[in-house]
Image (cartoon, rainbow, N blue to C red; front, side, top):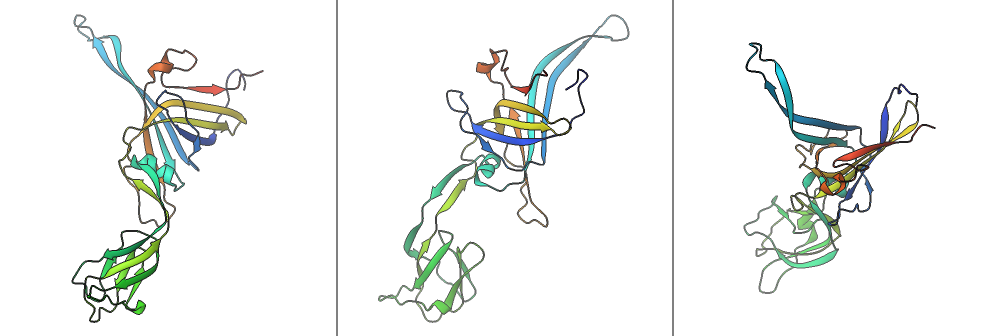
Length: 254
């Protein structure tokens, strides 16, 4: 890099990590392709003007606050990325089997019923007669993409409510708003494509806001637009090498 600087055009990896209770940074996770990433810095201030000159000239400016934010557009659909946008926890639900799951009463041909579990297979329906009768498989079927909705095709003379037995596959369960206020470390591991020089931005404490909009029907590729407030880190602020919000690192010129 010359003494006068250089032109720049940046690309790079953006990674996140949980901030541990002791303030240490956990394992890093790449967020995938991020076509847009913008760092916003601002200070709030109040101005003081004179009351004697007749021109109300500015005498001073008092800074009353400092804020920082990182806005990201994520291209990759993953449970971990969705957890950031949904302020969510993610946990596995193991595969298992179900017996005796009771359907609503009063069903007619064409009605659809949601199963308690998705990705069902080996579905068998029985009725509620004293000696339960098995409903022929031709009388019903799983519809949709997630194998979680049963459509009744022929009710026949079976005694309702129907009861379902089936197997279901394991799933990743993402619970919305179950982890509000979770703090993340963010790293931009970048490169100036004009010069080939590495650029590193580290932000110590980031708190993501819930995603404001997520398109569920897409005509083109979808994305996840996220915004994180960069919080002040009082522990690192006492270290002039680290600072209270973050730092930018570049290799020193030879």
